[in-house]
Length: 126
Image (cartoon, rainbow, N blue to C red; front, side):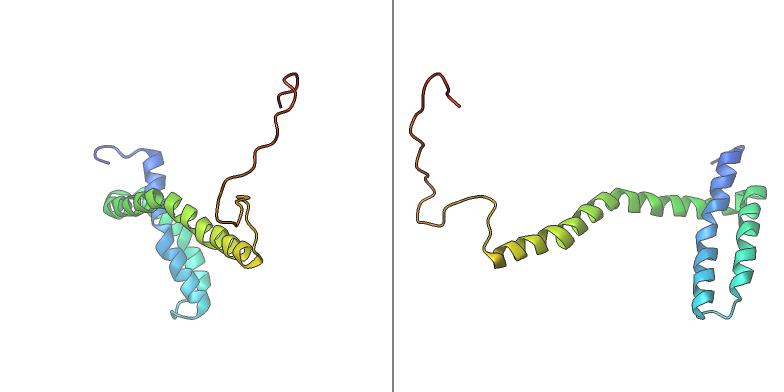
């Protein structure tokens, strides 16, 4: 972001300043910091306006936020699929094992061979 900063980039810089204020607001609501939550709500639009009006001092912060977002974005799909596997598929498989069910229809004998059906008419092969 060198040279002239467009309006879209200014808005992105201003919006990247919101998460710390939002975290401060959540901490104030929980009583962890001695700041009134209303002050944080008032500060949110002022922080965005500050990023819109003078974005240059906050460009480094914005680049850091973009790096974090990119890092999370690259790992989000693996995280979601891993959670689906652990939270849905593993308990379902364990429950089916406990109930003695098998969707593979494999015989439980010493051999996996199945008896073939006798051949039917050639006019109706299926």
